[in-house]
Every structure is written in C-alpha cells, then in structure tokens.
Length: 306
Image (cartoon, rainbow, N blue to C red; front, side, top):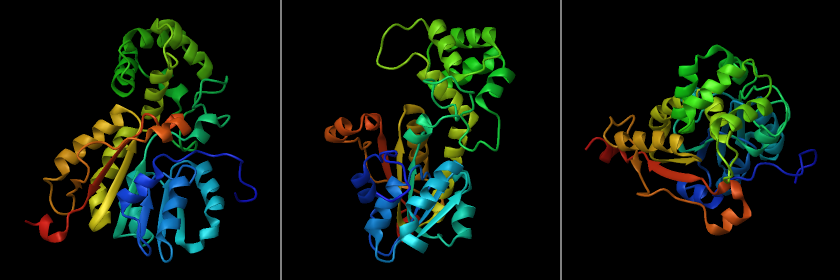
C-alpha cells in the first residue's frame, strides 16, 4: 500500500474476469470510464505493462484526486481526467486514446462515496441530501425533491428504483417537505412503504432512484454506449459491470441493437449470458453479489461491412 492512502478502499469486482474480457495484453491502450478508487485501473496497468497505457475518467473530483495519488507510480502510463463518461469520444481523442483496445464501464456508486461524510449518498448519518457525483454542478437530491411534483417523484422512483410502492412513497415525501437530511428522508420512506423486515432497508430503492435522477445516470449510460464503437479499434472490447436491472437492461437493449448498426457503431456480444462473480468472491465481498458483467466486441473491419 502507498504511503498517505487510506487503509481500505473500494474493492473492485471481478478483476480477473475484467482483464480477460478486455483482452489485456502488454503495450495496449485502455479506457476506464469509471475510475472509482482505481482498483480495476491498477490491475489493467499491471497486466498491460510494459508499454500499456490507461485513460481513467471519473465525474467525482474526490475519486480523481485519490486515483492521481494511487496511480502515480505508473507515471505517464496513467492519464487521469475529471470528466463525465458521456464525453468519452472527445476526452479519448484529446488524450490520444483513439483507437483504444478496450473500454470499461463499472457502474454505480463506490464504497468510498457511500461512506464519505457530507456527500449524502448514505442514510446512515444525518447529513444534507446531496448525492451528486460532482458537487459543483447540477441539482442536489434535496432540490430535486423540493422542485418535483408528486407524480414526477412517483414516476422516477418506480422507473429508476423499481419500487412498486412508489406512489404512496412520493405522496409521503411531498407531505413531509422540506426534507433536510438523507436520514430524515429514509425515515419518511420507511414509514410510508409499509415494508417489514427484509434484507435491505425499505428506503434503499428510493434513494438509489433519486441518486440516479440527480446524476442523469441512465441518460449518460445511453450516451456513452453510443460512442464506444467509435473509440475502439476493430477487435477492441467493451466490458460493462452493472449492479441492478435498470442499468443492465439499458446495456442489454443497446447491445441487442448495436450488432445491426453501421460499422462505426457496431458491437457484438461476446458472452451470450451475463457473467456473475464466483461464490468465493461473493463470500469475500458481499457488495459484488448483484454484479452483472457483459462483454462486447467491435467486429473486425471485414465483418463490419459484410
């Protein structure tokens, strides 16, 4: 471990499967669109040495600062940029990563973000409901709650959180406005939902939906998927890791269509079924249990125009 870094950080999921899916080899160029705490990035840099390079992107300035320190020993092989992955094509071109041999999308929120104080991702503490990956731009979750109608809240909680009791939850949220903290919000949702027991807190799906709405996560995912093939070389790979069905459905739907697109957008699935973490990994890292990996490839040029 490097001096000055925290004693523990986000544990990357399915590292070996990621390296295999990306076909990581020495001397190749890769793009990690969601750096997080840099676990996958470090593994890719190790496996692509000597001569490999990695462009790492993240919207969260704290993640970028962390990774610049963590990946500093790799020198110029690691290029770290604060950017929304919806800007993939322009960022990759600006830093000389077109074409790349592989692109990684590890979606969701990192353990560090969930546990960081003052970010509002967790309802374990009484702190302001922010939830923005980049705290310098966009509406906070609190502002979204205050400015949305009951119908709008119900729709986004149902669509993004897949919460079947979204209407009664939205009604309770509106009746309780203004809501100052995530802990207060979680309690409002718990009382309104009527759920008893269960493995997850009754507010989990609602807070996830609000976070996704605040950060326009599905819109950004659709945007980056449409750019990947133009960044990859022929034969290059895309690896995605999703943690709930909303994200995975966006990816699955896109890939089902992408095999029939023009050559500058065409991607073909490599694995017919999603790849899941091993039981050993789930035992070691409980947060990996919901991970779903998909691998796709930009077909060789001859196949792309056939």
